[in-house]
Length: 178
Image (cartoon, rainbow, N blue to C red; front, side, top):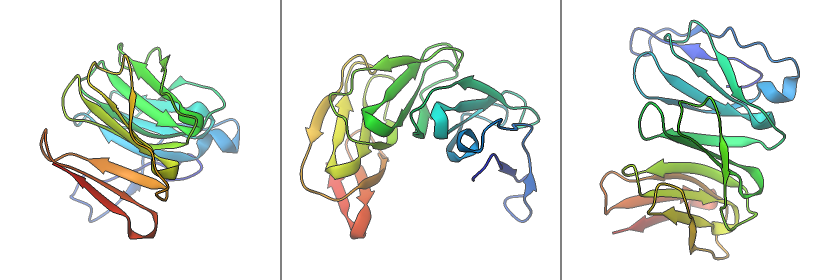
């Protein structure tokens, strides 16, 4: 989505309707990058200008929960209260109160971070530019650089199980861990 447009389907993707009461004051903060839905009612969207917006009523209303200058690229919630969002300049933010407040985490990198994924409430991974991969095993209290190499930009991370994970990136890069 871009410039504040959020689309919603209620029929398995056959039709899409604009579903947003979020009207950004400035166009930059309306560029939306990622959506994460915990259930039918609760969803979070991250985007430019440090915005995370959320809905608690299936997208009928959207509330901006944070602001700033750093673009946020992705978010992930382990439950209704605890979530993470990542973005430019190594920014990792964590909430423990459903996005009402966000605390900056120490990421140990200044690379742009593009995606975040948690396999459980304690263990999570982040991937970003220049092949950076970060890992936490303590719920985001500390992040270690697991891989840092000359790889291209890494875009997305996913773990179908606790032990098997995939990261994809620019120029067809596919990484797997077991």
